[in-house]
Image 1 (tube, rainbow, N blue to C red):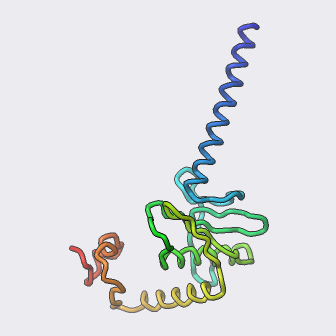
Image 2 (image 1 turned 90 degrees about the horizontal axis):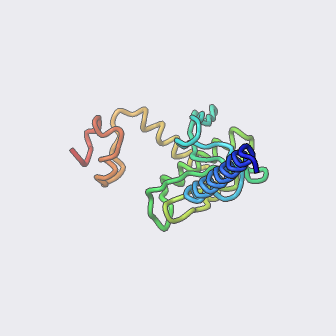
Length: 177
């Protein structure tokens, strides 16, 4: 075997190894994100290029789900909460996922039947029902009303929520200094 053939063989072997490790890395990422099989058509992660938010002008709603998967004819939103450990999904996370379902509905013209909420140890399949949609729209109306008011009472008694709140500096009701 000539030197040139050996070099070409080595380059080919390196290319195969690189492809294998890239494939394994993608498979591991998919598993960590709780993604089922399906084509990723949107990703809002640091490893991908900057993604544009989805927008629903009728509801004045914009958002960036972590992933959108195409599974057959459906587009399924996926929200990843890697630090969350819970046996049941939090209501606020369900509403966030419902907002992404509404954005998918407005963008693609038909609603997904469900969305996926991935916590550290569990992936929850949340049905996008008419009831959940109505709850989301009512919550959005409540939020808009509260935003128009001058003084809105704190809605909880949890210091941790205050500690990480973006409005803590301006809030006269904060539970932390």
